[in-house]
Amino acid sequence: MNRKSTKTIFTLLLASSMLIAGCGGNSNNAANNTTPNNTGNTPEATNSADDTALDTSPFTISFFGADASPNWNKMQDDVGKAITEKTGVTLEAEFDVGSGGGDQKIAMMAASGDVPDLIFAKGSLSKLVDAGLIVDMTELIDKHAPNLKKVYGENMNRLKYSLDDQAIYQIPTNMGVGQQSFDATGGFEIQHRVLKELGYPEVKTLADYEKVLKDYVALHPETDGQPTIPLTLNADDWKIMITVTNPAFIATGAPDDGEYYVDPETFEAKLHYKRPEEKEYFRWLNGMYAQGLLDKDTFVQKDDQYKAKVASGRVLGLISQEWEYSDGENALKAAGKDEYTYAHFPVTLSDEYKDHSFMQTGIDGYGLAITTAAKDPVRIIKWLDWMSSDEGQVLRTWGIEGKHYTVTDGKREVNPEVRDGLANDTANTQKETGIGQYLIFGARYGDGVKDPTGNYYTTSFPDQIVASYSAAEKESLAGYKATTWKDLFPKEDEFPVKETGALYNMPVPTDGKYQVTFSKTQDIIRKRIPEAILSKPADFDKVYDAFLAELDKAGAQEMEKEFTELVKKRVSLWTGKSL
Picture (cartoon, rainbow, N blue to C red):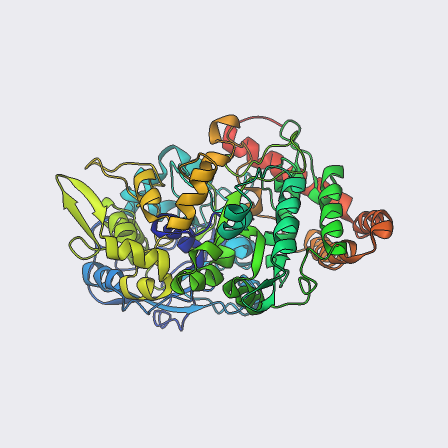
């Protein structure tokens, strides 16, 4: 689950698509005029008129999303008001709280059947599909959504749920079609003040990274009167994947396939922890802890405590994605402490490995689903289609002309005060403008794609990225003879496009033995990985080997075989290959 993160207005916009989520009372559930998807029919409103004309009368859509959205302002921001004015739609939204990723809430929905009209379910969509609560949008899209069909284009086949069930239950909206990444916002992070004092040292391997942290803390054991923390990680609930376990495959040259490593030739899957090189990554963390370089509270602190440490400025290094720690970093920016914010490096176990962060997966991601509770799915799909139009995309990504951006000689430019606000006072600026708050509500083109006017659909392109960097960032980049952080990373064209897509998003069985085994293995991973890292170095091999044996005893091998078959079916569906 390696999610690209927010840095400034452009990368912020991409990541915000993952932070918009909500649930609310369903004001449209009084009359249910739909046909449940498990009959094989596509729900239609009883009073649909023109196939594509947009009804702009007042209409409320209840919505649930699986991530928190701390900057949501109930559509009282500039962009939200404009959306309502142009479409008549108001979102009645409630957001998942804490760091649970919506899992518990969605499980309750699946059990009770009490769902909102529209849902962003992330990895829990299968629970709702299996409960018969999600609409097949195939016919809705075909009849009423020309913009959705235009944006997804040749990727429509990738929207199908599976080889055995080729319905379209969600439209992927947390990523843009034709996406080009112009900046890096993940990897191994080091504060700019550290790099400057040490003369911008080489940071390519774990040994390099460790040396930088060790050298600096020896010179500065305290930061603003508090003990300096060389490295801290966030192991609170599911975020253990982002900062503790996912980096094991990133640092050892594997792409992000969630909890699995999948052989790109045979498509055989196994839990990625079984790779010998990943054992060595965790051995490195074990050594960092033994030396006192890894925060002793890493596995007991809560999310808010972790962010508070980042905001204090005393954490020299992180291993994460910017969206995960951005609250703490934004506090530093607001306090004028840009030198305490972070640079990004593609650190690997050794020189033989290559960071795969920019390996392309093609269009495949989490997205929006219409539920069987929606009384007018046609109105909803038409609204999503308008949001997917050129007008809707520009509004969602750029804001309002004259207020948030200007057009001079045909060229769109973000107003400097808006750009600076999104970079340095993100929360208040998003709450006021709404820029970046509505990205998941419709299909969209990705960074680097131009609209018919010759302007980029998004604000994330090189000139804007460089303009948004702080003086501290520009100084660090100059120290590494780079213009953007991506310049330090392996590029997309160094890898083939993944035929399997983003496998952390692939539907898996929600009942039967698979889920039981997966749950068991997750419990084991979240208990034993910290145990291995915190063990005495002399005991590490014994603890780690016992961990792997425990996974297999819990049924991991059978689960891996089942996942392998699902992967092969996905490749067959998407490519036509017979596997």
